[in-house]
Image 1 (tube, rainbow, N blue to C red):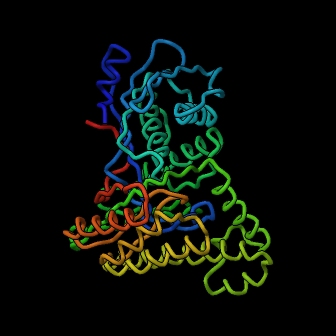
Image 2: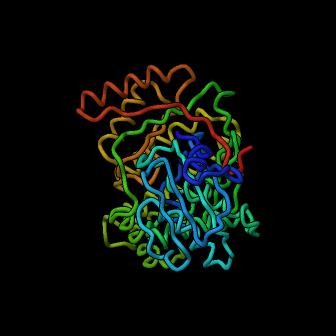
Image 3: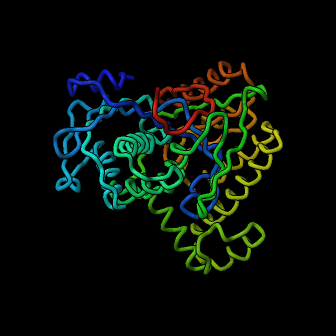
Length: 378
């Protein structure tokens, strides 16, 4: 990762006012429940986007990055026409303007070591880093609790990706050593202790290297199906269907695909609540079967996995993982495996061998510990 401050000096010929960082995230459990007003349990990664920023004497905003060759400049009159990676920056400026804030002209240099296309929210990390920088530079009165919704609006409305609020909430509100229990209806959060090392455990992240895209028909189709099912069932969102009511609800739905989508959301919400209960009690190992059940539900009912992630899950479990599941929106991305400390090398070798046998591109793997959310760096 290129140092953002160095990139700023190279691009703009002066030192930045400061550096702001926001992390990628993985979701421990609770997939596609966020836009159904349900529950999620992400934690922040150590990988992050860093924004070195400072005020500009020229109107508008100029942004450069270590993942694109040319800087992009736009003014308030051009803000609706920005495309590509810079759209995520322009979307944040637009969302701030739309919320009534006077956003200061600025120059921003971005660097990132968050894997792109891996389902770990590189876009939310970018949005959150830029938002945190602009809020500080402009002295904007935007409480931390209100920032995820604004960043989400940038991605939903400006960029056009129909994601829920989990990604931005995790990038902005997570705390080190904790998982973020988020009620996506009330937006209430609870920081759940998740000290893996103290329990002799680790989370192995397996990047399947099967890239995914949220701005496509599949993600949107899942969301539309869930919303239509809620309408038919006469509830505000699928969060309002309890496990006890599930069988009766499924009878009311004529479409078998829609039934499977509903079953995933209802059971996944309960798995989040069960996982939180175990973590509160310090029983981390026991969340493994819930993780594995979540993956089976995503594979069979929500139909968002691909062969690469299914192979990674099966290989991890065969190598002794307590549980494993895909994380993120699906159609590629990463797998989480809950393992004993010291077993990463053995599980990594098992997954790599399974990939080679299947003829897949080799996966990328690393161990993760819960890191902090968005902040200004020293």
